[in-house]
Length: 96
Image 1 (cartoon, rainbow, N blue to C red):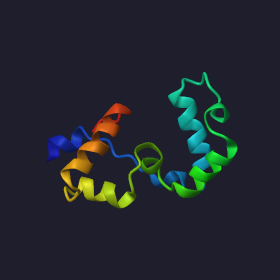
Image 2 (image 1 turned 180 degrees about the horizontal axis):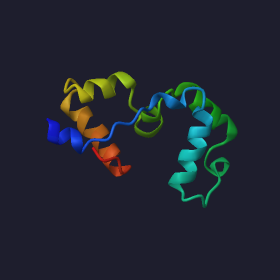
Image 3 (image 1 turned 30 degrees about the vertical axis):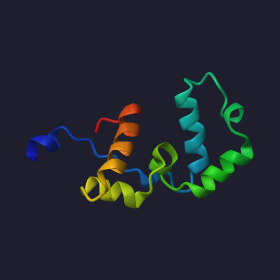
Image 4 (image 1 turned 120 degrees about the vertical axis):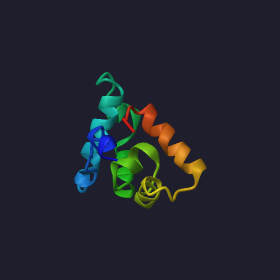
């Protein structure tokens, strides 16, 4: 376990509370390489709706609830859902 710990990075993801709109704008800009404005992808109303409903980066990127992520990392999430979330994380480049 110690060896695994040395190869692990810990990310605190609750820092966007209150900054969901900024996070969504950053995410869209990062995803498009800054070549497309976020407003060209989503209307301002859609961004506001997402910012209101989504509370964590994982909900924004992976359509995952915080409870699902906790269950996944505790090996208590159903295998099919774990595989779905894991595939999305790997596709996004997260080193899991």
